[in-house]
Amino acid sequence: MNFSKIHFNFTSHRKVYYLISLAILAIGVVSMLLVGLNPGVDFVSGTSLDVYIGQSFDEKQVADLVETTGFPADSIRTAGDQNEIAVVRYKVNITHEDVVKIENTVKQTYGDQVTISENTVNPMVGQELVRKAIYAVLLASLGIILYVTIRFEYRFAISAVLALLYDAFFIIALFSVFQVEVNLPFIAAILTIIGYSINDKIVIFDRIRENMKTAKVKRFEDLEEVVNHSINQTLARSINTVLTVMFAAFALFIFGGEGIRNFSLALLFGLFSGAYSSIFLASQLWLDWRGNELKKGKAAQTN
Image (cartoon, rainbow, N blue to C red; front, side, top):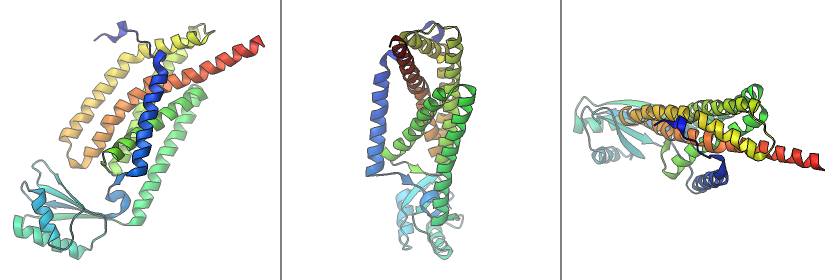
């Protein structure tokens, strides 16, 4: 499809975009308040066991076996190409002796090829990981504001960061609504989305800046035309880029295995959100901000 011959009026319905975005934010806030997130072992502490069974297994049978040891698992999931690994998770720490007891119990059913890899996180480590993750997002946001302000202007910078925060919260809200487990790869996905999304926004902002040099902007409608023209000029690039990366993220989600599945899921929806916020939020916020200043300037001249 040749997007270069298509000209959409993106700015005429910007209030609708704002309402849709606010509705999504409201759903996310309600979900966070009522049910919160589903944090993994990385953040709430506890023990995770990767039990290699050597053959495809039935989750209920493994759960019943583990329960006979006196340590019923909080969750059991499959992993591996042939679903030969049981990921057994506890939200409390269990001792190595208890792990050996669980291993011996599973061996009675699945044979001596059963092995267990243990990963235990204490509460202090979990809290430190959460704190560092928040610091990483805040530091990235401050760096983006500084960079975009120097390269463009502060209006672009603030509009971009507001849209980036929307992208991050969109993923968090999605994981809260569907109670998908939040772990360290999830944080990596958030930071990856921030990097991708700001690049997409800078492309549009750069085009707006270049078009502003030659445009005779005297009215708000003139500014609207500049933004519309700039988005349409970069539309093909935005669509082609996001689709290409989404195909890769989808392939990771399907074939990448259990360890990076949540990362792939967050990346997949984050790419969509990043493209949406670049076209329908960041540029529209800048338009309203700059347009209001233009209107106030003209009002001041007439007084």
